[in-house]
Length: 205
Image 1 (cartoon, rainbow, N blue to C red):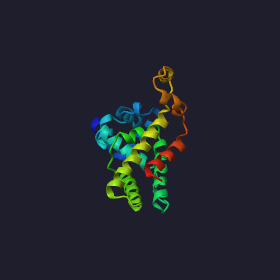
Image 2 (cartoon, one colour):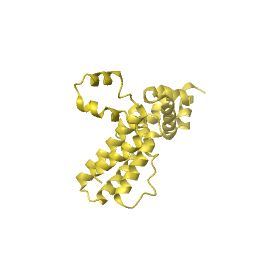
Image 3 (cartoon, rainbow, N blue to C red):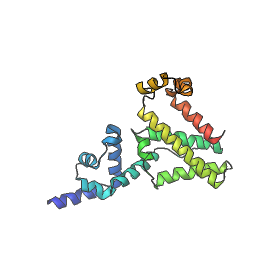
Image 4 (cartoon, helix red, strand yellow):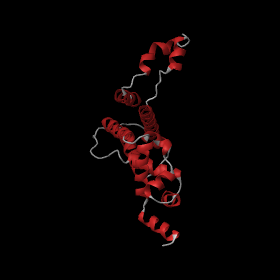
C-alpha cells in the first residue's frame, strides 16, 4: 500500500465525531493549552492533514468541540414556568461546561452556530419571551446569563488565588478601604451559591 493509499484509508475510517471526541479526551487530560492538531493526530495514529481533512481548521475544530460540550446539557424534562425553566437550563449548561477541563474556556472562545448551541439558545429565548420580555430584552438578558455563566465557570475551573501576595500587600497600604472591607468575600469559593445569586440578580426575581 502506498503512503497516499494509507492516508486515504485513514480518512475513510475517521469522521468528524471521532476527531471531536478524541480532541475532548485530549482536552480533559492536558487542558486547553495542551490541545493541538498534532496531539490529536498522534492519538488517532494519523497525520495532521488527516485530522484537518475532517476538522478543516483548528478554529473549526474548536467550534465543533464547543458544540459537543454544550450538547452535554440535556434539554428534556424542563419545568413549565418560565423562570424555573431558565434556571434549570443554565444549571445544566454550567454542569456541561464543568464536565470538561477548560470547557468554559473552549465555549467562551467560539461562536458556534451548531445544532446543540442553537437548540439551547432557542429554548433559552423561548423561556425568556414566555416571561414577558420583549425580543430585545430576551436577547440581551440571554447574553447576560451566558456571559455570567461562562465567566463564573472559567473562574471555578481556574481556581485563581485572588488574594495572592500582591493583592494583600496593596490592600494593607490602606489606599483601597472599600476593597479592604469586602476582602474576605473575594476568596469565597461558594460557586453554587454565587451562581444562583447571579441568576436571581440578572433575572430580577
